[in-house]
Length: 393
Image 1 (spheres, one colour):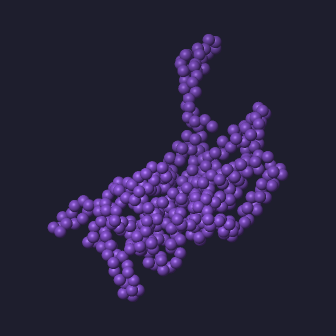
Image 2 (cartoon, one colour):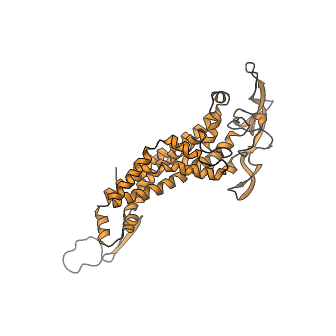
Image 3 (cartoon, one colour):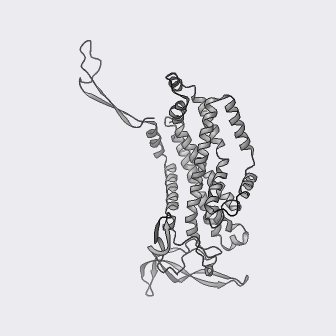
């Protein structure tokens, strides 16, 4: 598959017969050629919704990559004295006693009130208290990517002892915003890892099934049908229950990734098989076969490159399925568990009506993160799928 390039040719003088070209003799002519990838990129750029969704996806992965720096506090830091503290809004100006205003980046503090009916302590935002906030402030120490010791955070209170809960606090007084930022890394990466595994299984088995056909095709298709017929939730329950409780969170993470990807490769395998069945009799494949190309070269050099754009679009649409699967497993308590932080783990705190009524932000923010990620991948995948056919007007 070529990219943008040029052909160069020199026009020689005509010695016999009438001239059939207006080109001057000895002049070099350059002809530009546009490859398939350039055509796909050009059509994708014109789809504004898909490009906006791609920008959101990039931002989410950057948030996951620099989670330690972006989070004001560590995800495990608890302050029980601020249990279920409500969200604080960022403000840029304060009003002086004389009525004038001045710039002061801050959040409002809290005050404690007692509910007369429930007789319980609650926090409310106190407009009279000002908690100064700064950028690149010192805070809890961490290791960026597990390698670089740092104590600088993008945003945080000037005084580390002051409370700052931009998205509220949970039942242990932990910062929901910081936990949501850390959860972005796990939830977004588990989708990529699961899709990579599904991609390998789907492309390899689908290619073999569509290229060779016969009994090999029959065996692979029956296996796909068996896997597709398995009930999803009972299978997840059984596999998750088999994970030893003594395993580390990292081992559990990779096992959950494998479980999620076990059922995600069947649809891709069938699509690749169908495309192989359609392409294996095309003229370019026949010409390569007559030219002495081996079966390996036919598959990986001639047929698979023709499916690259289609496979890329299918994979992009498969990532949100993996994210939703991990979130569902963790929410039901059979996926990732604390101290691992993911969007599904955060939603575990919103499993009862009393908690949702007391602290609705525990349900709103993780759910909103999942919705934004899934919709962004769907919009970007739809745009990429349309752009994969660059000759369709």
